[in-house]
Each structure stands twice: as C-alpha cells, then as structure tokens.
Length: 66
Image (cartoon, rainbow, N blue to C red; front, side, top):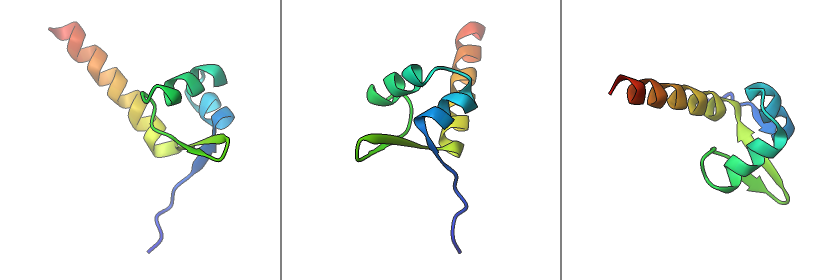
C-alpha cells in the first residue's frame, strides 16, 4: 500500500506556514525544520511541516506553564 504524502517546494512550504521563503530555507539549513535537499532545491513533506508547527506550539505552552 503506497503512502499518500504531499511533497512541497520551499515556496509552497512558506505559503503553508505563512512565512517567507527565506525563513523556510534558513530553518531547513540549520536543521530546525525537517526537509531534504534534492539537487539544488529543498523539498518538504506537508505532514512534517504541520508537526513542526504543532511541536513548537507545545514547547512554548510548556515553557510558559513552568
């Protein structure tokens, strides 16, 4: 059974997260944002980006609670 995954370009990832492409690429380069460089272009899985945002939200809420 094939896994249904949506692969996004840096521009599409930026649109999804409502940030600049520059921000997406900076986070990907420093390893904060999950993605893979394919040739000269970065590619991102939609599910990974959404999980990244959820994780950041949880970490901020936990830090605020302590």
